[in-house]
Length: 112
Image 1 (tube, rainbow, N blue to C red):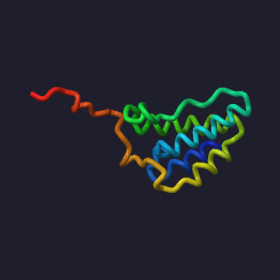
Image 2: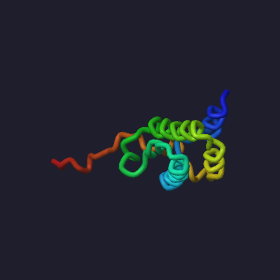
Image 3: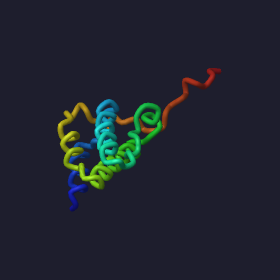
């Protein structure tokens, strides 16, 4: 297994999907700072804010994996892993608690 695969496996234990939005945004900002310092393109944005309710747990986990892959490609995988490893279990969204990605807009329908 590669170092990246080891980190992904360690991060996504206990049916974790992604960090809670505030923690995920902080992690993303850490990566953006690296991008700025190295003069490279930023990683894809995390699936938070408006995207949170419309993206599936798989989409979120895949986006987090892409962030880790980006970190690996730019030589900061250890820094990324240290940040994520420092999060408490409460700082993670778990599969059982994750929004399905099928936002329910029944409240917008008129009642008969």
